[in-house]
Length: 173
Image 1 (cartoon, rainbow, N blue to C red):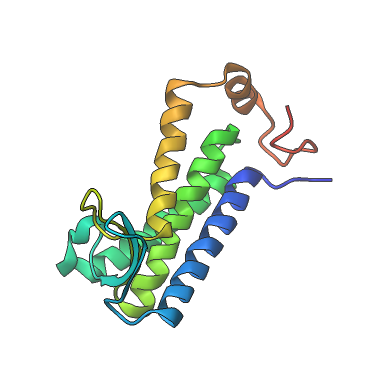
Image 2 (cartoon, helix red, strand yellow; image 1 turned 120 degrees about the vertical axis):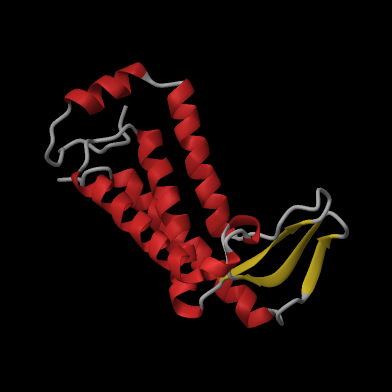
């Protein structure tokens, strides 16, 4: 059986994007804008807010540019996964998570001009965020782990591996 190049990218991207969409759809169907449910009072709440900007509401006046930036990043990540080299597992997962976050928030920006946020850590007075933001951060974490703790045998296999699809699953030891 032939496996597509960088299969773990696609799996991480699909799972991440689905989780992001499901949670945002649930929040929009369940909450009124500004409504908050304390799951752990004064520590963690679900709070429905809309963010026209990026992280921490930065660039709130640049909604149109953020739409196109999300789309551009998503396209570049898909092109890298399709036509770039075979990546090691952690890099595939990291890129898939980055794609899920960029595309998930991009869907919101194109559809409504704002992003749905609802994860509210009040203990540290942190900005309200969403599952797409979590996946962006997990993607960065995957790259940092891969950078500082590379698996040499995987790196060598990825660099010398076939350029076309492989008969071996990308997650097999």
